[in-house]
Image (tube, rainbow, N blue to C red; front, side, top):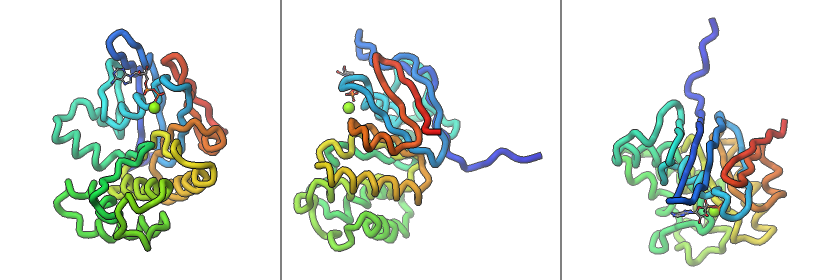
Length: 229
Ligand code: ADP
Ligand code: MG
């Protein structure tokens, strides 16, 4: 009999709700995605896009419901276990890059590897990722010496350094002009092809959103998932 595939990343969100006091942000949200898929999340401002991304990324807890990545519920882990889990399973790219200004480009990309004791090939991978995002000649620069698009490319390399199962991007092109948005979008899809993770991107840009395999639309606390096939 054929065995089920192993080592396939899977994200399952089941009956998820999130309230902030009396404010109900997400209501009974369910979906599941497997390795290799690309997902756009759209919805009006305040519809819970960042909240959903933060819960998937284990930065916030749901009020009800479950998140499971490869059958592990991260919210039952202890704090140190959760930190280790987040660092190895999740990559996060924010709208305003969150780079450390006092560190060089190379050091910024290496920050998520500091939590792991034995990573002899981390520097090699950082160089490889910086080459793939086109910043080989900028590795010694500080973030303040780069353009907005270049800083986002560093943030993307940093998010991928530990080979996460899921790459979450919250409006990664929100502060960028149209041409730079397209460069960053192309880069994200190119790296997604190579890394085969689950790519989830919140964006207001409908041209960008139309390039994803799945489209999750949030409105009034609930979500609708459309597939391109
Ligand atoms: P989006 O990213 O779609 O613009 P958010 O997820 O940031 O939306 O926010 C959804 C709703 O939840 C908003 O009404 C916002 O004010 C509220 N909210 C988000 N975070 C908090 C918080 N920490 N405390 C209270 N309310 C919050
Ligand atoms: Mg948001």
